[in-house]
Image (cartoon, rainbow, N blue to C red; front, side, top):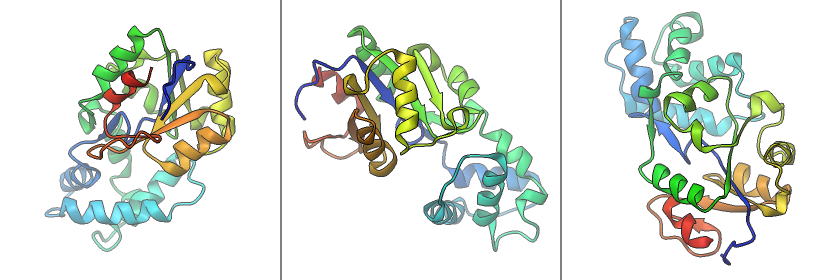
Length: 223
């Protein structure tokens, strides 16, 4: 990727880009289920079933009822009663807690470096109303001038509307914004449809200089 000296703002996806479930979705699900008498569930099996259910999603708007349906699919075959009729409320609230999440090791160094360059920073995330308080508790909110969440805007990524909304909140035109995320479809294609530049984060992979990076700390060298 060419150097981005013209860029004035950098926006970030959250899940898979800044944070991830800890130790995994399946581990948290199994932990909550065990407290409700559903013992000996294998976290790895729940992870696989969650991933399969996630891939089947279409037009997911991160509403509570949609999450309940997704969790029911994840536990299908493992429980007699679906979680939506039993322990889903506790499970839903569990992901409000910072201990259910891990901040990737490259996040704070990258955010500090970009802030030192006087770049405006923002969040663009497909999430629900749990995200704002969660970012506060994880100590991440202080870095961002705009935190834009799909549940508030009504248009999830890859809709250009959520990117345009963020552009207005930051006071920076789309062509001067770089968006960073872990999804080609929702982050890269969505940002580009709104006229923003975009970078795909693939941790553990070598950055190829063509819009892909293996660590967020590589961002500083682009400016």
